[in-house]
Length: 193
Image (cartoon, rainbow, N blue to C red; front, side):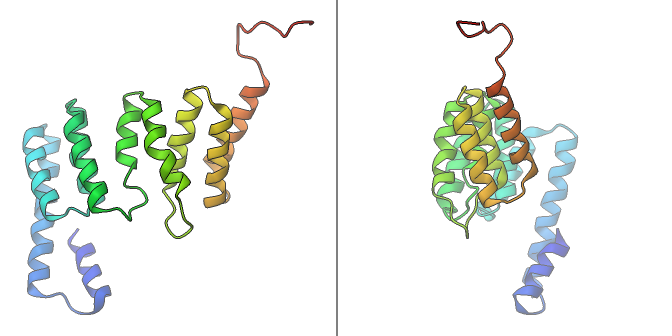
């Protein structure tokens, strides 16, 4: 963590200031403490310290997803969604800012909500701001789970445009196309056979 912070300072153009060094050390110490509390199962302290870290790092995707995930794991979905919404508001240019919300809905098997959240991100994708491949994967899987295989395939084909040669997208397309060609078990044969 400290090395990464210092590397960013050096790339930005110069030796780190004393303040930068102190800040990098303090943030690394917070992260180490979070790891210790998490390993020990002290989740309320983790939530408290992550909320503090979020207050001074509101643009840090990892911090908000860690904080949200802890709330999700305690079934405090509304609190997690509030943090995710704040992250989206503060980071509108992050093409993945909707992924935490969609992941929560997916874990709760609310596939219609996943589509509601991710479809606009894929529709508004630009070459310079491509969503992460998981945005496409999760959206395609949600369509598939809602028995909309054509839409799933369409999304995975868009993924291949954004990420040519993406092996999971290619595999998903082949798998779903094969499912569409073969009837599911227990399906009566078409009339006339």
